[in-house]
Image (spheres, rainbow, N blue to C red):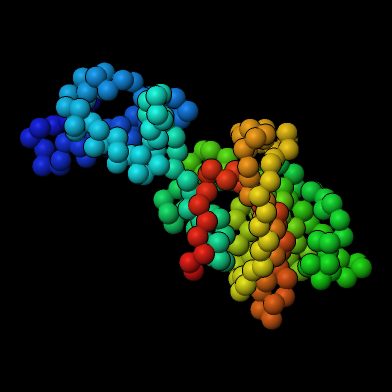
Length: 240
C-alpha cells in the first residue's frame, strides 16, 4: 500500500502508519533490519526525506533503532510500568491498550524457604498457595511470576487465578478487598537457563528481579511475589 497524496494527513505520518502496520503484521519482523532506503522509498512511493522522517518517528516510539554501519533494526517498545502502582498487571496494561494474558505454569509452586510464610505472617497451620505463571503482553512474554498467598485467608482466589485470571480482580470480587500498600525490593542479575527459555531471552541479558509484598487494611499481608522481567522490555517509573 502506498501513500495518498490527496490525503490531508502529512506524507511522513502516512508512511509511519504504513511502516508500523507492516511491523505489527510481521512483514518486517522484530530483530531484523529494514530493507534499504531506496527499496522502501519505492515501496511506499515517497522521497527519502519523507521516509527518514517516518523512520525517525518510529525510532522515537521504540519500534525501530538505527545501528551505525548496519541499518535500521526492528525492535519493540518497552512496556511502561508504574513502580508504586497498586493495580495489577492486567488492569494497568489493559488500560494502556495492551492485550494481556497469563499462562499458568504451575498451580502448586513451592516456596524455597520459610521466609515467604514469615512475610505473610502465617501461623503454624497455615497452608501456602503458590502459583507460577508467565505474563504475556501482546503475545510476547514479559514477566515470570511466582505468586504466594495463604489458603486460610484467600483460598477461593486460587481457582480463578490458576485458570489465568487476575489476582487483584479475584481478590476484589470474592473478598471485597483491595491492596492498600506494597513493599518492594529490586535487584538486577542474569536469568537462569530455565528462565531464559520461558522469557525468550539470552543468558547475557540482564533481568529485573523484584520481590513484592502486597498489604491490605491495617497493613495485613495479602500476597508475596517474585517477578522476573528482562530489563530491555520494561520501563519503570515512580509516579503514582
